[in-house]
Image 1 (cartoon, rainbow over the protein chains, first blue to last red):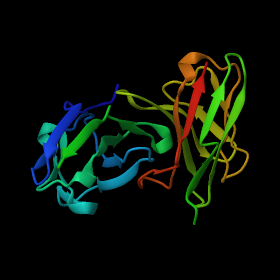
Image 2 (image 1 turned 90 degrees about the vertical axis):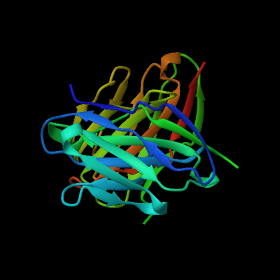
Image 3 (image 1 turned 90 degrees about the horizontal axis):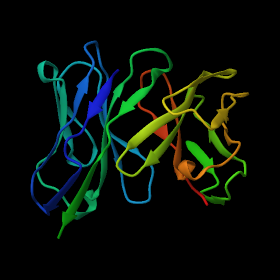
Image 4 (image 1 turned 30 degrees about the vertical axis):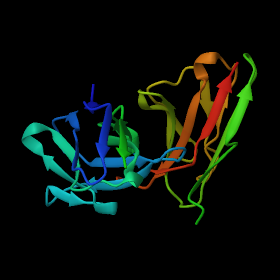
Length: 114
Length: 111
Protein backbone atom coordinates (compact mmCIF):
# COMPACT_ATOMS: atom_id res chain seq x y z
CA UNK A 1 0.00 0.00 0.00
CA UNK A 2 1.09 3.52 -0.68
CA UNK A 3 2.52 5.38 2.31
CA UNK A 4 4.09 8.68 3.28
CA UNK A 5 6.67 8.91 6.05
CA UNK A 6 7.56 11.98 8.02
CA UNK A 7 10.35 10.98 10.35
CA UNK A 8 10.50 14.14 12.43
CA UNK A 9 7.46 14.17 14.69
CA UNK A 10 8.44 17.15 16.80
CA UNK A 11 10.95 19.84 15.93
CA UNK A 12 11.93 22.79 18.11
CA UNK A 13 13.95 25.63 16.62
CA UNK A 14 14.99 29.12 17.58
CA UNK A 15 13.96 32.03 15.41
CA UNK A 16 16.25 32.54 12.39
CA UNK A 17 17.35 28.89 12.41
CA UNK A 18 17.11 26.92 9.19
CA UNK A 19 14.45 24.27 8.76
CA UNK A 20 14.36 21.00 6.89
CA UNK A 21 11.50 18.54 7.34
CA UNK A 22 11.79 15.13 5.77
CA UNK A 23 9.16 13.41 3.66
CA UNK A 24 9.51 10.07 1.92
CA UNK A 25 6.86 8.24 -0.04
CA UNK A 26 6.46 4.76 -1.37
CA UNK A 27 5.04 4.80 -4.87
CA UNK A 28 6.88 3.99 -8.06
CA UNK A 29 4.71 5.81 -10.55
CA UNK A 30 4.20 9.44 -11.43
CA UNK A 31 3.41 11.44 -8.33
CA UNK A 32 1.94 14.75 -7.39
CA UNK A 33 3.34 15.95 -4.07
CA UNK A 34 2.06 18.50 -1.57
CA UNK A 35 3.01 20.16 1.67
CA UNK A 36 0.23 21.50 3.86
CA UNK A 37 0.45 23.60 7.00
CA UNK A 38 -1.98 23.67 9.91
CA UNK A 39 -1.65 26.61 12.28
CA UNK A 40 -2.98 26.06 15.82
CA UNK A 41 -6.75 25.71 15.80
CA UNK A 42 -7.03 26.13 12.04
CA UNK A 43 -7.60 23.98 8.99
CA UNK A 44 -4.98 22.73 6.56
CA UNK A 45 -3.68 25.18 3.98
CA UNK A 46 -1.51 24.48 0.96
CA UNK A 47 2.14 25.53 1.27
CA UNK A 48 3.39 24.25 -2.06
CA UNK A 49 2.95 21.51 -4.62
CA UNK A 50 4.95 19.61 -7.22
CA UNK A 51 3.43 18.18 -10.36
CA UNK A 52 6.27 18.18 -12.89
CA UNK A 53 9.18 20.27 -14.17
CA UNK A 54 11.73 21.97 -11.93
CA UNK A 55 12.18 19.70 -8.91
CA UNK A 56 12.79 22.69 -6.65
CA UNK A 57 9.44 24.30 -5.95
CA UNK A 58 8.79 27.48 -4.08
CA UNK A 59 5.72 28.08 -1.97
CA UNK A 60 4.24 30.73 0.23
CA UNK A 61 5.97 32.40 3.20
CA UNK A 62 9.48 31.57 2.00
CA UNK A 63 9.09 27.79 2.02
CA UNK A 64 10.52 25.57 -0.67
CA UNK A 65 10.74 21.84 -1.29
CA UNK A 66 12.94 19.64 -3.43
CA UNK A 67 11.68 16.56 -5.21
CA UNK A 68 14.38 13.89 -5.49
CA UNK A 69 12.92 11.06 -7.52
CA UNK A 70 15.77 8.62 -6.86
CA UNK A 71 15.28 8.99 -3.12
CA UNK A 72 11.46 9.12 -3.20
CA UNK A 73 11.75 12.27 -1.13
CA UNK A 74 10.12 15.68 -1.03
CA UNK A 75 11.75 17.57 1.84
CA UNK A 76 10.49 20.95 2.98
CA UNK A 77 12.97 23.75 3.70
CA UNK A 78 13.04 27.31 4.94
CA UNK A 79 16.31 29.24 5.40
CA UNK A 80 15.19 31.26 8.42
CA UNK A 81 12.12 30.39 10.47
CA UNK A 82 9.93 32.82 12.35
CA UNK A 83 7.87 32.41 15.50
CA UNK A 84 4.76 32.58 13.30
CA UNK A 85 5.86 29.38 11.53
CA UNK A 86 4.88 27.40 14.63
CA UNK A 87 2.42 24.88 13.20
CA UNK A 88 1.99 21.29 12.11
CA UNK A 89 3.24 20.38 8.65
CA UNK A 90 1.88 17.54 6.54
CA UNK A 91 3.34 15.97 3.46
CA UNK A 92 0.90 14.32 1.02
CA UNK A 93 1.04 12.37 -2.22
CA UNK A 94 -1.67 11.58 -4.71
CA UNK A 95 -2.94 8.05 -4.22
CA UNK A 96 -2.98 5.44 -6.93
CA UNK A 97 -6.48 4.54 -8.01
CA UNK A 98 -9.75 6.37 -8.35
CA UNK A 99 -11.03 9.42 -6.54
CA UNK A 100 -7.92 11.59 -6.84
CA UNK A 101 -7.26 10.79 -3.20
CA UNK A 102 -4.30 12.00 -1.19
CA UNK A 103 -2.27 9.95 1.28
CA UNK A 104 -1.00 12.07 4.16
CA UNK A 105 2.00 11.64 6.41
CA UNK A 106 1.49 11.71 10.17
CA UNK A 107 2.68 15.30 10.40
CA UNK A 108 5.57 17.20 12.00
CA UNK A 109 4.88 19.55 14.85
CA UNK A 110 7.20 22.58 14.58
CA UNK A 111 7.68 24.93 17.49
CA UNK A 112 9.72 28.07 16.93
CA UNK A 113 10.99 29.75 20.06
CA UNK A 114 11.82 33.44 20.37
CA UNK B 1 -16.32 32.47 -2.59
CA UNK B 2 -16.76 31.00 0.87
CA UNK B 3 -14.74 27.91 -0.11
CA UNK B 4 -15.51 24.88 2.05
CA UNK B 5 -17.78 25.42 5.03
CA UNK B 6 -18.56 22.99 7.83
CA UNK B 7 -21.12 22.98 10.60
CA UNK B 8 -21.14 22.66 13.53
CA UNK B 9 -17.72 23.80 14.79
CA UNK B 10 -18.03 21.86 18.04
CA UNK B 11 -20.34 19.13 19.28
CA UNK B 12 -20.59 16.86 22.29
CA UNK B 13 -22.52 13.64 21.83
CA UNK B 14 -23.52 10.91 24.23
CA UNK B 15 -22.70 7.32 23.32
CA UNK B 16 -25.35 5.93 20.97
CA UNK B 17 -26.60 9.29 19.73
CA UNK B 18 -26.54 10.17 16.06
CA UNK B 19 -25.67 13.33 14.20
CA UNK B 20 -24.85 14.72 10.79
CA UNK B 21 -21.81 16.84 10.04
CA UNK B 22 -22.53 19.26 7.24
CA UNK B 23 -20.10 20.20 4.48
CA UNK B 24 -20.72 22.58 1.60
CA UNK B 25 -18.41 23.91 -1.10
CA UNK B 26 -19.14 26.67 -3.60
CA UNK B 27 -16.26 26.04 -6.01
CA UNK B 28 -18.13 23.52 -8.18
CA UNK B 29 -15.56 20.85 -7.36
CA UNK B 30 -16.34 17.30 -8.35
CA UNK B 31 -14.30 15.58 -5.67
CA UNK B 32 -15.16 15.81 -1.99
CA UNK B 33 -13.62 14.06 1.01
CA UNK B 34 -14.14 13.47 4.70
CA UNK B 35 -11.16 13.00 6.99
CA UNK B 36 -10.69 12.50 10.68
CA UNK B 37 -7.62 13.85 12.42
CA UNK B 38 -6.33 12.32 15.62
CA UNK B 39 -3.17 13.49 17.46
CA UNK B 40 -0.02 12.00 15.95
CA UNK B 41 -1.97 10.06 13.33
CA UNK B 42 -2.25 12.55 10.49
CA UNK B 43 -5.42 12.55 8.42
CA UNK B 44 -7.35 9.39 7.72
CA UNK B 45 -9.83 9.29 4.85
CA UNK B 46 -13.32 8.21 5.89
CA UNK B 47 -15.33 8.55 2.66
CA UNK B 48 -14.99 10.35 -0.62
CA UNK B 49 -17.12 11.27 -3.61
CA UNK B 50 -16.16 11.78 -7.24
CA UNK B 51 -19.39 13.55 -8.11
CA UNK B 52 -23.06 13.87 -7.26
CA UNK B 53 -24.60 10.48 -6.63
CA UNK B 54 -21.26 8.66 -6.32
CA UNK B 55 -19.56 7.86 -3.03
CA UNK B 56 -16.95 5.36 -1.91
CA UNK B 57 -15.25 4.18 1.26
CA UNK B 58 -11.89 5.45 2.35
CA UNK B 59 -9.47 4.02 4.87
CA UNK B 60 -11.67 4.19 8.01
CA UNK B 61 -15.37 4.10 6.97
CA UNK B 62 -16.80 1.98 9.80
CA UNK B 63 -19.43 3.79 11.86
CA UNK B 64 -20.02 6.48 9.23
CA UNK B 65 -22.22 7.06 6.21
CA UNK B 66 -22.31 9.71 3.52
CA UNK B 67 -24.49 10.92 0.69
CA UNK B 68 -23.90 13.26 -2.23
CA UNK B 69 -27.18 14.41 -3.70
CA UNK B 70 -25.74 17.66 -5.06
CA UNK B 71 -22.32 18.86 -6.19
CA UNK B 72 -22.18 21.34 -3.31
CA UNK B 73 -23.09 19.20 -0.29
CA UNK B 74 -21.43 16.16 1.25
CA UNK B 75 -22.85 15.40 4.71
CA UNK B 76 -21.28 12.82 7.02
CA UNK B 77 -23.60 10.79 9.24
CA UNK B 78 -22.71 9.11 12.52
CA UNK B 79 -25.48 6.67 13.42
CA UNK B 80 -24.43 5.27 16.81
CA UNK B 81 -21.73 7.48 18.26
CA UNK B 82 -18.89 5.74 20.09
CA UNK B 83 -15.99 7.20 22.12
CA UNK B 84 -13.61 6.05 19.37
CA UNK B 85 -15.24 8.62 17.10
CA UNK B 86 -14.01 11.50 19.24
CA UNK B 87 -11.89 13.40 16.76
CA UNK B 88 -11.61 16.46 14.58
CA UNK B 89 -13.37 16.04 11.25
CA UNK B 90 -12.33 17.88 8.13
CA UNK B 91 -14.16 18.08 4.84
CA UNK B 92 -12.23 18.89 1.67
CA UNK B 93 -12.92 19.39 -2.00
CA UNK B 94 -10.75 19.18 -5.07
CA UNK B 95 -10.95 19.77 -8.80
CA UNK B 96 -8.97 17.23 -10.78
CA UNK B 97 -5.39 16.79 -9.62
CA UNK B 98 -5.17 20.21 -8.01
CA UNK B 99 -4.71 20.67 -4.28
CA UNK B 100 -7.48 19.94 -1.84
CA UNK B 101 -9.27 22.82 -0.14
CA UNK B 102 -10.16 22.15 3.48
CA UNK B 103 -12.99 23.33 5.65
CA UNK B 104 -12.45 24.72 9.17
CA UNK B 105 -13.22 21.40 10.87
CA UNK B 106 -15.69 20.03 13.41
CA UNK B 107 -14.42 19.05 16.84
CA UNK B 108 -16.54 16.13 18.08
CA UNK B 109 -16.45 14.62 21.54
CA UNK B 110 -18.36 11.44 22.37
CA UNK B 111 -18.81 10.71 26.07
